Image (cartoon, rainbow, N blue to C red; front, side, top):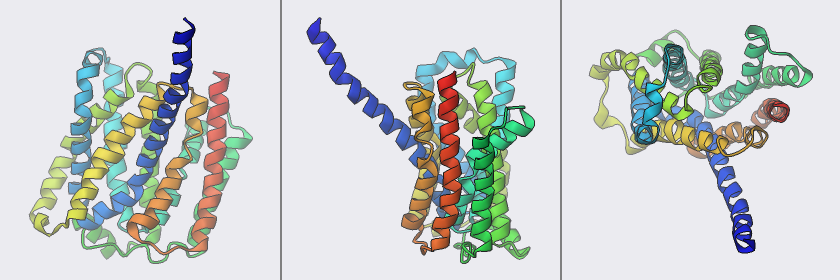
Length: 329
């Protein structure tokens, strides 16, 4: 028995380490979506890139149904309705706004705007869901607004709307209308709002359903929403002109940021406490910022660091708040 206990004690740190790797990988993969979405929209039309994302994501998640196949039959009418709403907002709305917005802004600007997601989630929960406000939530919201304003007022968004030759007719229309960094930032913020909707709806449906099953079903349900728009873009799309890097970005956008990121994060959460998971939330915005420099080759500006630092302070506050709430539960 002493030997058995010894083996369990030896395995425990290794098990915890694997969980931490899953949580960290999930947040880093989610963060990579911001710069990768810019690579996708620079290479191909928005709706074609978006269709590839949800189709590839659903395809990679599909094998999980062999493990959780019995859970789909248990879904009630309310669960299906919430999943359909997640498909509309979390898959369709998020992907379209993200791709269109990132065609007009730099990766760094997109990373800073996306970093406001925890604060926006808190704000919506306070205003619409009746959650109690406290100084941590309110300060995080103020920091999110302040960081983004500093980036725009301080000129940290300059040079961010160039883009490549992709984007398709939707992006051409936005540019013809004079779309620049401000419009791009607003579109990315609309993607943030869709992500917040996904999060809040997901919290409700995940009480009765496995989050990985919900992610697969939402991605699959979003495909028919994209197909007519992708078909509209297809005649003007020259697939042969897309470089290998563009196809790899589209593959990663679906397989990595959607499917693998979801699997890593929710697999890690299932094996640990909420207080531990909350500590990893700051990796997502940090990943988006660093990868914007590495993958997109964007020029560093101190105003970037200042704006991101202010927003990131709010992210850390919200991580603290999530950990505190998890301890209370």
